[in-house]
Image 1 (cartoon, one colour):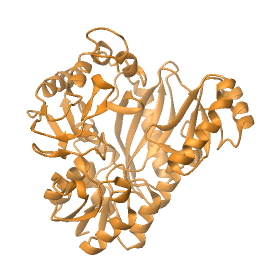
Image 2 (cartoon, rainbow, N blue to C red):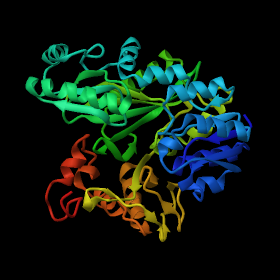
Image 3 (tube, helix red, strand yellow):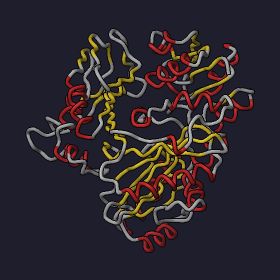
Image 4 (tube, rainbow, N blue to C red):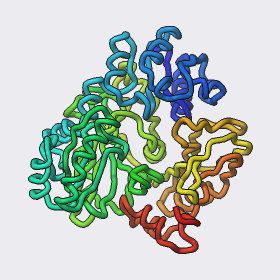
Length: 457
């Protein structure tokens, strides 16, 4: 591997470029016409403009990305997260072109991308799955039979969904009859696949995920992350490790994640996501993300391992550089996702020019961002401005450091979630580490004057 093309933008493109530079690789950035002055473009050795601002005509255009790789002489492609990162057809075309795809095999992406097949594979590996249908439900009658067996409420999930999309919770047979064809139609429109399956809905559940790594022969985990603080099923704050997770649950969960990675002969970085039921101290497989995660920095801080560098070396044919015994997580890390949105206006996007940008620094504070002062926040893509990541020897220390870091954030030109995140860092439920996947939205609607949202969203 000599020349790496980064098929992404923003902070993850910058993160990949930094790792590649440290390895001595020549780098190529791709960009839309809206991103020609972006930081990731300026950091790369060269760049290729691959289309207009629309993501579908640029970053999601497989042919344009592959043409840029051919023209630039790249011999490897890193997809980052989002965009083409979990599209098996793209990974296959990269491999067919004789290039290294920095990620798992196209078959592994295809297998884990189909939620029904992923559930079946997890079960075969001995990984607990949520009680529900054994495969897609073909019609309302089959769905009603599954729901009767598992009990209400149940979740209808798109087989090809992901990222919190394509999910609908129903509480009765009457609602299920009405909702099933609607979710099937939405799944067809959004994912090109109308298949859906049913799972028992677990109230007050926590979202805990395990970082895994493989080189096709050896498979390890790098601990767990707590990702339950979500708004509309999108993560807002992540932690490593998960607070108040019983040691025996952690052991079973991490062992299950490694077993699934081994079952599919996994290459590179992946994340196995679980639903944890604290009332029963049981966990269930949700899905596997076959890419680097947005929240990977918290794992890097507690394990002192560069996951992106490891992705590149494994993709280049080298074995894993560490064993399971060498992974000894220490301390606690938090990641706050700073976005260009206005929480007091229903998190309405706020694109514009960053007339002022002062991001925090100091001991054990890391900020991953793809922006600089004077840069543009375009309206065409995700509104993530930066990830403010902190480490402490204890959760309490990390949280105090997170508050200090958020206090240092200064942004002008666009509205941001910084004040919202700062208030969240003081919320009693968060401070106590007592929360689940619907807690954040419950806290946002508590109606108090000092609540997380100053006006009704």
